[in-house]
Image (tube, rainbow, N blue to C red; front, side, top):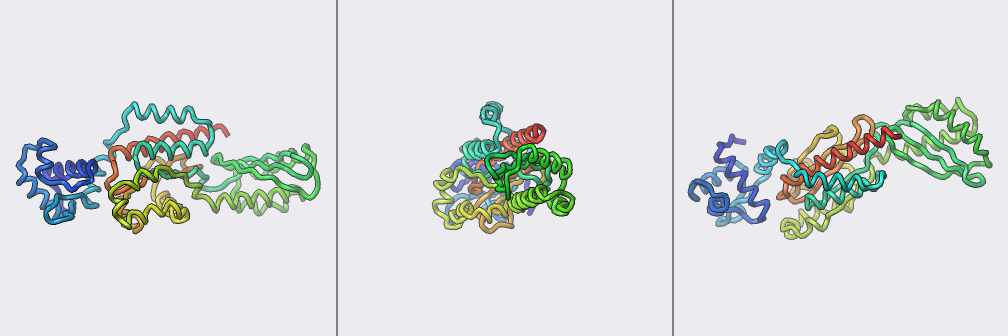
Length: 345
């Protein structure tokens, strides 16, 4: 793309700001009057024509004003990425909500999705944190009744799974505790593959427990993209882009096709680091399903241990100035919570 002059950049940024607020094509006279520009409408119109030829603006109709093109939005987002901040009052409100929430991962995810949807007026999506490499940390075996035993498994990264086992015969709690202690010392920090090779070094009861433990860890690994929590779908269904465009409405169906959504988030996660934020405009050339949309996404958690993704999906005309700092702030809060949770395991 051609380099912009300072005047062209100013006109472009003001036009996008106005279009985000009104969803109406913007004319030169509107820009001059609304933003009190020290320029004539004719001068602004000429610059808008140049910006259109350069690919930063589009003209939907011959006599209408201009609307931003994808490249124009990218310029707009670039100047916001390191400048947009969430007001202190909003930060305090959000942090207070998390402070009042019970120390439960599912509650955190639900709250994060609600906060993101409310603050951005877009569709939020949050994946639960999951271990980047599934490794064993701790097991508890608790006799419940008869042959039934509650097995509680804790992974490195803080993920906890539990299931009720039915053994071949009743086993006293003392024997179960002894088996758990031996397995905890033998398996600590091992991966799924390493655990599978250890069944020959334990007795029959512990072999059965290891087999069930391995199966549980394998299931956890295969669902490593985590459950997706969403909120705010009604926020965008009334927006002009989604009311008038079949393509935009089709993008919303992604929320009914969780496997596709999980694949997209997994791909975005592989291209990001914890604390990093990405703005995908028009699907960023990689997702045809999002050609009419934008996503602001970030990765949160404890690097190398347990991470997840969160973000907001909306029309390309979303309020980036509000959405970018909101996503960044909530990602930081969740990272702190995940780190604290791991430290307390």
